[in-house]
Image (cartoon, rainbow, N blue to C red; front, side, top):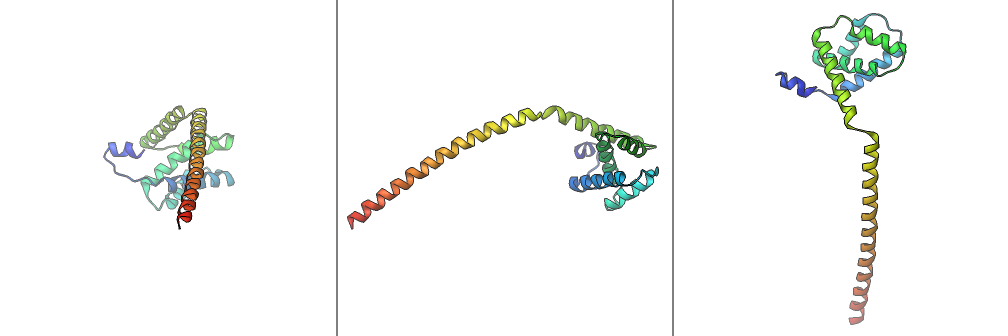
Amino acid sequence: MQTHFMRRGMAIDIPVLRVMNTAHWLISYMFATTCSGDQAEYDVLTYDSMGQDKQLTVISLIVLAAMLKRTDGMRARSCRSLLLENRSEDFYDGVSLYEQFLESGEAHFAQEDFETDVMDEVVTLREQNAQLVQQVITLQATLKNMDAKQYNQY
């Protein structure tokens, strides 16, 4: 998203941890209370949580909408629809841009590929470890022999 903004001439630094923490806190708040039906309540809570930064508030709400889309249940759907009501076109564009980003990421990283790569690396590292242990043992034996020869000389 940061690259998207930079291409459009808006230099913005997105503090990912703050945005994600705010989105997680807000989704917890939404599920712990009844959806009040007042979109402004969530906007104000997000605005305050993001240090009263309007751009980061919008980004946090976009992330929240994406999280709610991936959450099962009627409550998540109703909170998401409430969150998306009567927003600007830029907001909807941001939601679709973030959705595209998330969907494209899913296609690139298959769990099986990751596990295979990790296991190959683990096997390689174990073999290297065994070789290094053998080298250490050999060097220790050589050192003992050299110490014994030096001791015998004196």
